[in-house]
Image 1 (cartoon, rainbow, N blue to C red):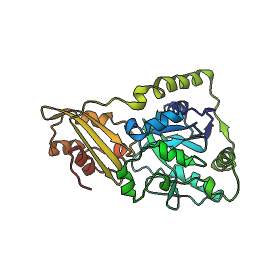
Image 2: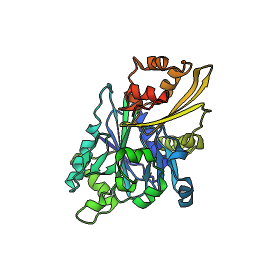
Image 3: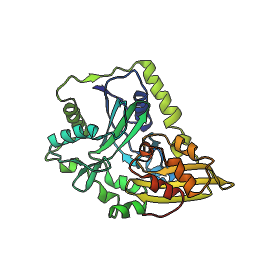
Image 4: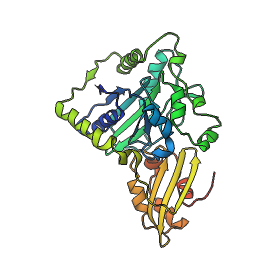
Length: 332
């Protein structure tokens, strides 16, 4: 395993580091990154940024907003939050068990007296409260698995910066985003700072083996900084463009929420866009292109999905659930 140190607390730069090493096809070894961001909201690849953040509060506090390339929901980062990234080659993504990345983190946490567990959405939890969320991005034969560790983040700022939809809270039987999460520091037996925690986690993940640190060349660092500026700091990437929509349907399923926005012409789908916190790990362009020109009728839409494996796009959300959302049918 090779460790990459970003030496940055800027979200756009850290996400650029991830993408650079995800697409670095001559890197055969498992890559590990541990990094922190200054106060930042990181929205999922398929979310509508305007709907996920409390814009007035975020602007007043000077909180950065960036978009990552993986699915899932929006998260708040600050210097009390430690992010982890694993990047590796993988030939077959069928029924991939991503707990192979989380188990070493759980083992490391338990070594510090934190009895963490993994829930069905690849979150790390302490009892009923969440301490880490994770997401996946696939690029060719390489996979990025990354997540957060809420060590000592300001949960009050977190709850005020994010706009959590009421249907999400209702589906989980809880009253607020603040009640869903806890910090690791609250459950430690003694005092520990986030940087000491980071070092202990690194030691546990390398399990006494040599910690090989990747040495970035000046050219590589420049390429990463250019990617941060041109992509991750661009308004278009972060906020996106909303195509004109004749219909907008939203539903929440066990595997996450989906919003479908579609423009129709002569009873056919001219444009379609999927938004939500579903755990997709592939770009949605292929799905959207397959649906373009299809008659907006249930059987025709269903046929598009008949032979398609939608798990890389929608996670555990089923074909029937996706079709029902496209057609505006409530099957929940």
